[in-house]
Figure 1 (spheres, helix red, strand yellow):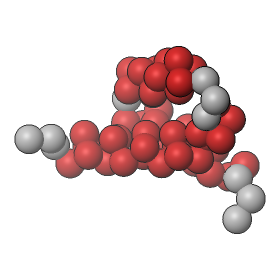
Figure 2 (cartoon, rainbow, N blue to C red):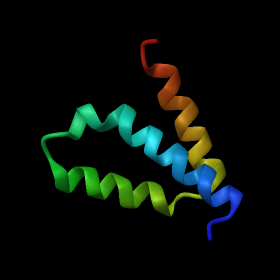
Figure 3 (tube, rainbow, N blue to C red):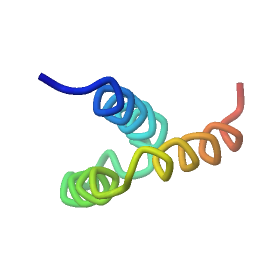
Length: 59
């Protein structure tokens, strides 16, 4: 069973991947590499990245 922080991190990573997937949709190796890299980050780093990426996406 995952902890609350683990679930929050997983949700943020999934949102980041969905936001950025258009950029590397054609290259599954790139997608997997990005996903592995995101999973190595801690929750605070993932939250910061999510905020940075979210602020650059047009509403």
